[in-house]
Length: 414
Image (cartoon, rainbow, N blue to C red; front, side, top):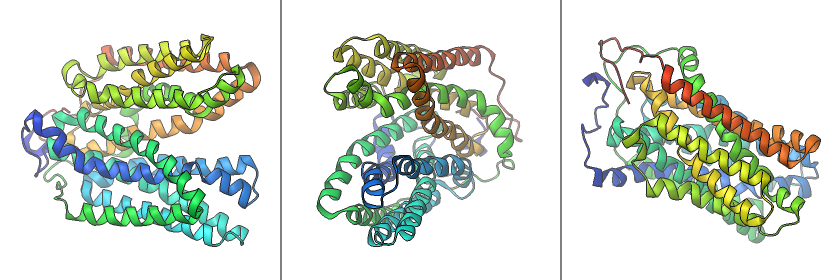
């Protein structure tokens, strides 16, 4: 690896027992971003439907437009991390997240003026989508800069743990705030937390943008090379999409109790395997881990579809969580290996956009299949998508193209 491809403030080699300690302070900003996502998630549809009087489809659209903004801004967030530095990207992202809280507060204050309140909600969702992509991408790059590029998978894994933990905590906090202080309380909390986090981020040492690296690659060229990895990620992500969107209705359809526990089991499985096996990708490589992960996820979805008891459904959710947990970091490492480290932020930004697209599309696609053919057909269809992801990963493992060469003549590896 060329010395020009190493960030200035990143040490050459960090002892393993210090890696987590260096990662957690900056991954904490990802927690803040997704806490900001989670707090209004349970409140927004109810507020829009019951207090503003819009129908359920419009209320659902208000939630979904955040994912559109996140998807559209991911590549630019990655490019900003490459050129302006990760800390600056995180700080901008936190300001956008704070703005989302301000517009939530404004929407609550203007609830008697329908159009002003709706417009404020739309603005809140859009700026939150941008803030989410900038903060999470910047945090990942900041963590890599603090521990070195050889620990990329470890940083991404911790980023995912922060993501799901924040969503798990944010949703009940939002419900509690909504029951006591209404929608305004959620907006005010988000605003204060994000401003405080911005101050903390300003006080942490930055990792400087690279100097002397070749001109940034065009995003279109990055997209072409990342697309196979992103497609495998998106297809695998549809398993989480159907579970997160329809597991409650599936339990009702089967006449079972305890749907909430299935989501808890999924989340614990997802986070637990990352915490128990933090170095598995570094030890075995991205492709082997991704291939095994897809097989486990596929087994979980089939168990969900064919299971005839809540216990089997719980087991299916647990297997799906175990399987999907390492897919994102495993394929991310392999995608990053193709490019010089000077454009890693852009690569991760483009790559992450595929999971945003997956989460946005999986719900409507599964919903149409359920409406026409039932739940078993939907689980089988999504299992088929995961099988395609498995096939694509095997193909990539055996036919991956050589890395793009930096101008210094050295191959840049993750």
